[in-house]
Length: 463
Image (tube, rainbow, N blue to C red; front, side):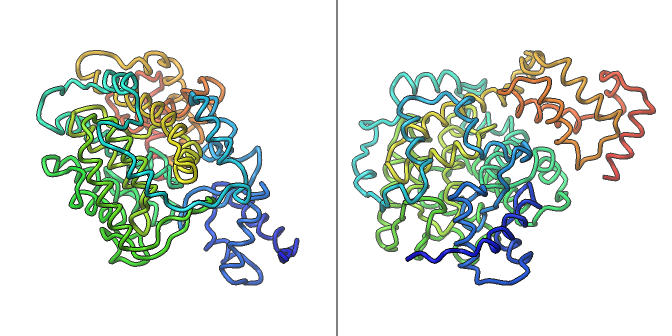
């Protein structure tokens, strides 16, 4: 018989989380409790509240944050509601079926273990997750001006932009709360955002190191143990409970938050399957099929103690970087869309929803890196489309003397009334970039007076 949780205890948890609309970890909730309880009891109660729909959760395992369920939830967490991304991402009929299954309560889904036959049945260049038409479509979209130049040329050309966009978006998918602006300041100037955990800065800086590794060692990088082990070591640096687990295959059991999937536990089998994943990935000839295979099988195997999905997202970029294609930066991908797509692989061995997300994500990444065209004399169509709105948003921030901490909120507020739903995230990023590029030689284009700009600059510098 299941023991009922006292309503007073649940109410206390709801009140604590309600005071943190941007999310709070179980560890911080524990500190706020009036009467302490065992960590396992606390986690059980929180999971009950999530399962009953009274709380939301985002992130995996030690990265989980709990958020209140309210119409007043900030835009940054609105994507976790699960009701909006189907309006943004074109879902196939098959993808909708997967989504319908994984959005059921965990108790209503069948417990499953790792299916080795799913990996063994994939034969490189004979089995395909992407059809020939889909692979051609991605190839056409992703071609860059670097074309036949040496491997990694295009990635080096857009390195600064890639470091920020990929580091920010991949971290965001793990529940990291840094804004694009925060990420840019951290990567370029080493400035941590106020009021954020050091662990979030570490996650972003680890992404920066890992991306630089993929590009600087492009001639040696491939689907081999050297690359994947070092990629994990860089991404997990200073983040694991056991520091020696960085760059090492796991020999402990792990669980998946809010999933009925149970990964392999036997170290020998993990090692064998890891070798098989690398072997098959290295034989795949098409760069986009190879990228998608990495996104499917590295998270599914869970070869490391943690940080597996981050490894898979950067590993997916290996063939794109080497082939001088536009990288996959996961721009604007809703966190819940990605999480549910991965759950479809874990619990159903079905890639339909992940493929929908993959295609949409690549289209967005291609659009994000359209800035490269500007160096060839072609204007950015997005900035041209929203020329007036960008100018008005920047001007209002300057005139209102908005400080760094309130910038993202101000831009989102403006965008909610003036920009189409599908373009909001990109609009926020573009305006943030404009603000970072402001100086005494270019502010006049926003039709603000020198005194207004000087006052805003002073406020910006001190915030």
